[in-house]
Amino acid sequence: MIIRPGSLFEIYHEGHKVASGFLGRDGSIWGVAVEPDHQRHGHGAVLMHRLIEAARVMQHRRVWLKVYASNEPAVALYYRLGFRVCGSDCTTENGAKVLNLT
Image (cartoon, rainbow, N blue to C red; front, side, top):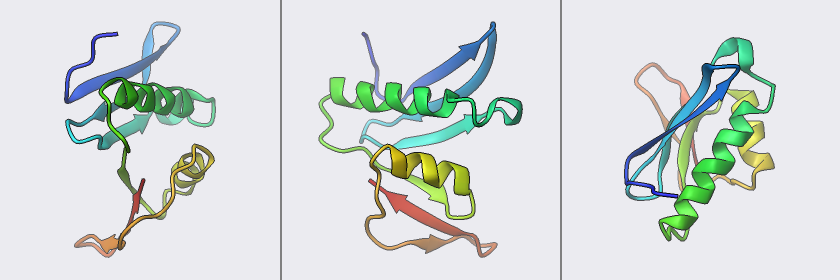
């Protein structure tokens, strides 16, 4: 598996991209998105497993991400995958709470 820092990962289902996300140079996971019609079908979990495995291949000791606290399905998925809140939470300009997870 050849992985470059800043790699884009995509999940396809029946020839259509249904999920994507990036793995940063520092082990950050960002830009994770699953098409609305394909949410809750396991595509997000498959994507996250691939991102985490890629981080291991790149020899990152930990991965981290940020997620809106109001995105309950995503928060639940990340908790199922073993992520936990770390550091302090922050709030965006519009008042949305963001969780830091590792």
